[in-house]
Image (cartoon, rainbow, N blue to C red; front, side, top):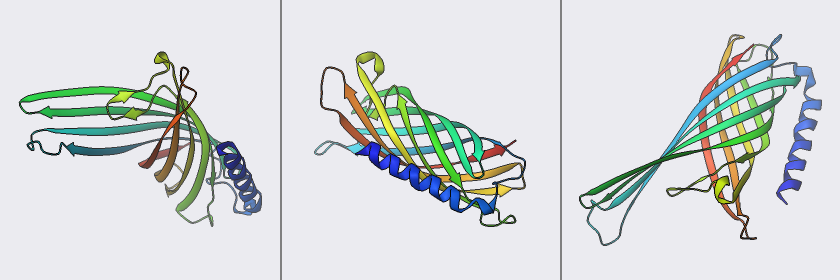
Length: 205
């Protein structure tokens, strides 16, 4: 079902590219885009019936690194390396524990950027892709390839770039990921959904 949805989305993406070729490239003479961003999320849990000193705090820090290639007008092929840092702070009365770990996700994404007119600084875009990684945060645990887990997820996103001349842009986007985690010893996969806002910068060359 997910594969069919991705195929339909890709078809719509290409159709959009065909019908908007009159708008031209995002920036004349620029074929490549390098971008990075940050996103941060934190939440805490207080144990029922326990003093306020008994609590767990989790935080996630995401850093994507992307290299885009404009293969046709506003259609862009953009491999992405997403590095996630995870931190847990656990307080149990007078005992304090900290736990840190990380994981990565490698994705192949397609974007379509559409600039409504040559003088506009605003460039909306849509994104679709698929990624594979070595884990996903699960309340202090990382499912790792080395322990027999396989992790994959579709990437769906929408965003906007605000151009600064023909050199760079501020990039804001929403990303939906639906992780599929499968243990080779268990035929039933389980899933995690992540909704993330990224804020970052792009450079064109």
